[in-house]
Length: 176
Image 1 (cartoon, helix red, strand yellow):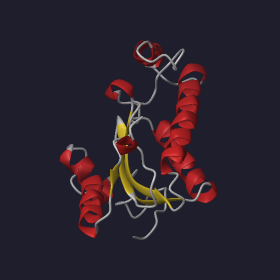
Image 2 (cartoon, rainbow, N blue to C red):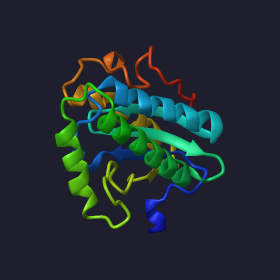
Image 3 (tube, rainbow, N blue to C red):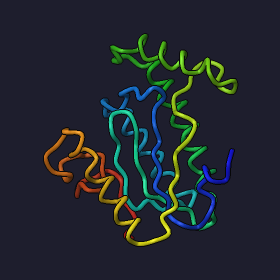
Image 4 (cartoon, one colour):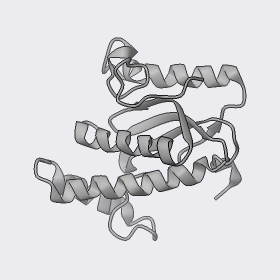
């Protein structure tokens, strides 16, 4: 993979982590909670700093960094682990009315990638943008917080629960 596509410096990065096919999986709180739990794990155990985030129905945005310059490795592991957890939940837990449809789509997207035998949950790239100027950092945080408003889901960014703009957000973020 090109070095331009890796978050491998000590700088903060803006990342977009997208579900394969832009499937709206994060319309269920139980899947969002897996994302939150695993982001928290990365913060507590892998020295990841998250400055802003939002979980949208088909993707999430982060402004994050790792002071050791290994954010790309942390995100790779995060994506692998969360994909396995969510796919297992879809496959084996009761209550997912879209089970067959979702598994069919994730299976379909896996056919285009040799390393994914059964399912592809996340798109391969995170589109990292290095935020090496305060103005760019601030612009991306505003973008993240306004994403649910621009999509028409809420009228104020504070109302979107799975966002660092919400004062009751389940994930505490680092002060910039």
